[in-house]
Image (tube, rainbow, N blue to C red; front, side, top):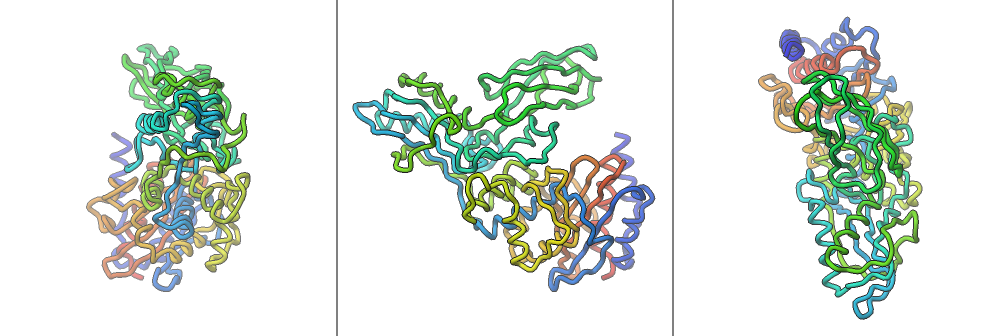
Length: 480
């Protein structure tokens, strides 16, 4: 409560720009005493002609965090189109004779990051997806599978996570990789029974969905009541031994955190295998993936097809909720459209190529993933504003960026100020990094593109955010 009060007082005690020149507003922000040891970069441009209106170290390469999603989603909308949909197929890998499938039953992923998601509007939930697959098998008259149920995630290969992602991220839901076959946003819920005494280890109750074979080394402790989620799951893709460290608050109920599914394709196969066996289908083999058997044959009979929501809707959730998985899937799909092999779909040259084709300088640019989770992504603020200028005609994409006082991470920000419903800003946050980038629609009819990056700060994140909110507000009123 004290911190919130401090933040509000700080925000509303900042002098309103009034008739201050825009460059002075930016200089005042960058010159804050509390930011003296940080690296600060700001760039503001007029969208109508791309002219820089104000800046501070706008050409210095800085870590963008999740503001990088603006680039990934913007390029995806241009390259793939707003109506693009991902497809998942259920394929019989052999002839069906007298009720027997003489081969494997394949779930063939097409990169859909929304498959089985309970959070994405328009996506079928996990239980419904598995039920639909089982119904398709029954509809074909299959009562026996001479092979096994196989999850085929070969569409994107095995390189699902960023190569520079932190070990402390990989086991948690926001560090889930993007694969050819994704399920339930590649995340599970891990629930503990709270303990009343601080320092005690809260026992694990369950995972949802159940992850067969996963083993947890529980090193968690009970922290003070009200201390919140301070727990981390340490694990790696395709690895079923996970370590849980940190703390959850002491209490008398249950407490849940979210982890990343080690092998989504294998889980999909196991879930369908269980459902079919319960329905009386005899299956000879054990569930597997394309990593253990050959991928689905190209001429296999398609029993069922599932389609994702439209790409524009996926982009909405990517930017509004800053979903790393979705951004990584978009990067991989852009690579597929460019003709890259499955082993190359995590590469970012395709994004840099797009920038260069559109006349955007890539000096000082290093992209290592699609989401901004890698701490070694960096580029200058002036590159991001140049990109925003280049994409300013795509109103459908711009609508995916949170609107001050209205939507996404900006829903409760800058209400009652000149920025309400006038600033669209995508946030970016990783350790010691706070960034925002987007557009300002001023009352005088001018649209500005802005990028604000603060790196290597030692303040609380909420304090840096408050300073940035003040600058975004002033962009609406400063003299141009």
